[in-house]
Length: 263
Image 1 (cartoon, rainbow, N blue to C red):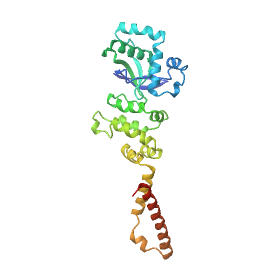
Image 2 (tube, rainbow, N blue to C red):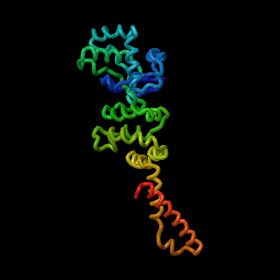
Image 3 (cartoon, rainbow, N blue to C red):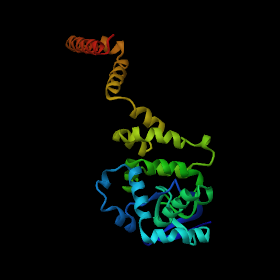
Image 4 (cartoon, rainbow, N blue to C red):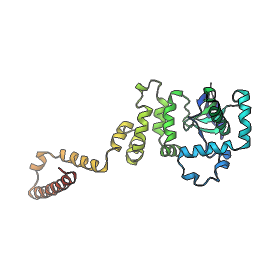
């Protein structure tokens, strides 16, 4: 079921569904979660996975969470769905209930507690289930997530929102995006060209993965390819001598690099 709800005074799309408990993340900034972790030594320096494990273990120590375990088991599930942000898979409300579901899944060892009822909202206003894998890639990439928070990567969010269920018809798959995005994010100039619409994500990836050394050689080759015989023949004597001197210097640099690569 799709409808709208208000968060901080803004209407956002909402959809009811069941999500895998292992795909969801505890929200570190949630007041209850923060209260459990602020005393943890070097918590901020832990990896995202380590932080999630710490949050889970600390929540299970809370008396309120301990009391919820038999209550939820007795009811056979939740009376009230948890609230999840679709583009990051973070639990906005219901971190304790998620911890209970994970604990019950561990205890029972069955699939009864693997799916949890959720109210799903998204910053990208996209509740299409087939787009989940793309948003999960963004949620798992810290830099991409940061850029989204800063209203960056608008084109990527727009591209994902327009994708259909048939992956073959889309510009790239979630697997492609997982491989390409970190490389492109490391090259701000290339990323800017992608975000402006000048190049596709695949083109951005091809450019970004080129090393600086390779890029310089390619640029030099491209410039030399533009030199025409007619240009040389029409040079005045002073210009021709200057050209010859410049070309000799070029030869020396080629020989120097040739020695570096062992040819």
